[in-house]
Structures are given as structure tokens and as C-alpha cells.
Image 1 (cartoon, helix red, strand yellow):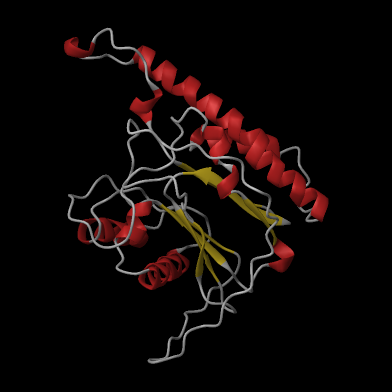
Image 2 (cartoon, rainbow, N blue to C red; image 1 turned 30 degrees about the vertical axis):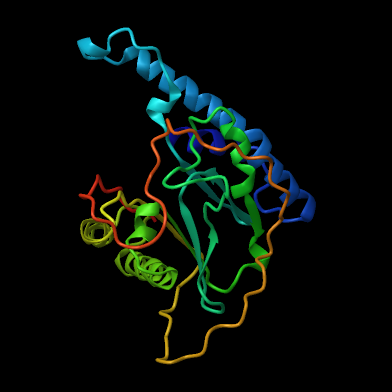
Length: 275
């Protein structure tokens, strides 16, 4: 995450962040999927190779060759600017859009038909940089739903819910909790961290890390009992570009759990929530 933030911030410093013209959004998409992705993967591989060289291995593992699969990791990056917002990455994370004038919905999830069982795309794959395009989209701020918010989460949050509807309701609850507890400066929310701890303990047992963003006051959504199903949603004003070929993962990755429903494993380390 630190590498992704550092590289993206350095690139954004030289970009026109308020420009949301079609040409500019096209350039942003190319930057995320074709330029930033390979540099990010290369920087990650260099960092883990250096970590391996400095690591003190136990006697039984002395002499083992370095392998990226030992550090298998997924990555999600969301960029928010005055003119547009965008997302990219790879792996089993979910991005939810919350709005006051449209039903909440999952706008990015891992949905590669080549994945089997609990496998997930990972930075350790030989062609990891080519997997970013399928999870890349750019959205102009001028076309966003009113007072929308974003909830980015690892798969442990969604797996703690029985249905996608429950997942969306939980995302809205977390963002409302963050808004209620925020004191003006972005940072960690103690009450929100307690909620994530409970979700991991009583839900999937998987790790739960969440990043939250809100573009305005999010009003609680009123749900009437027996209300009819919502009409099909219009597409987001995304700049959609054909995804590059993705690479099927190997069995040597360290995949996170996939799918829905409650798990039975013991809680893992909890990631703090950031707003």
C-alpha cells in the first residue's frame, strides 16, 4: 500500500486534477492500467526481494531461493481528485458506491472466470501488471450521484454477510459511523475500529480492512418493509476500456477466502479503518 500511495502521489503532483474532459479521463485510465501498474509491480518485487535478503531464516530454511509467491498479496488503489475519481488493482477486494439518489451497489469486484476455489489474482503472479486493467475505471465528479460515498474493503467484510444486500447495508452503516465519529480531521475512528473487530470476530474470521470516503453528508437510507425491488441501474459515467488479458493464478499464491456466507475460522489481524 505504501508503495502504491507513494508512486501515485508522485505522478499526480504533475497532473491537472480538476480537468475532467474526455481526453483527460482517457489519459488517467492509461496511466493507471498501463503505466502505473507495471512500475508498481516492479517496485513491489524489488521491495520483497530486499526483505528476503535481510530476513533471518531458521536453520532448516537456510539456502532457500527467493520466490515472490512467499509474499503473495492483493492490492486496491482508489484515487479521489477535484475532477474525477478512479480505482485500480487486483485481487479479491470490493468497492461499494453509496448514494442518496440511487440504490447502493458494488461497482468493482473480482469476477474472473479463470479463478477456481479460493484462488485470487496476486502481485506475485508473473504477469500481475496485466491484471490491473480489468479492475480499472475512471469516473468524472460531474456525473457522480448526489452525496456519494465509497467503501473499499478486503474480502473478509463481504464474507461476513449472508447476502450482497447485507453487505451493502453494512457498508452504509460503517460510513455513517465514520461520519458520526469524525471530528473534522481525517484519521482513525475508534468506534469504527471496534465495529470491524466485531465483524471479524463474529463473521468470516478473515481479516477486515476498510477505507472510506464521502463526498458530502450521507443521509440514512430508509427501507420500507415489502418495498418492491429497485429498477435496473443505469451505468456509472465510467470511461470503460477493454481489459488486458489476465493471467490465471497458480496454486502457489496465498489466496484469501472467496465467496459469500459466514466462515468458521479464527479471527485474523484486524486492519484499522481510515476515512
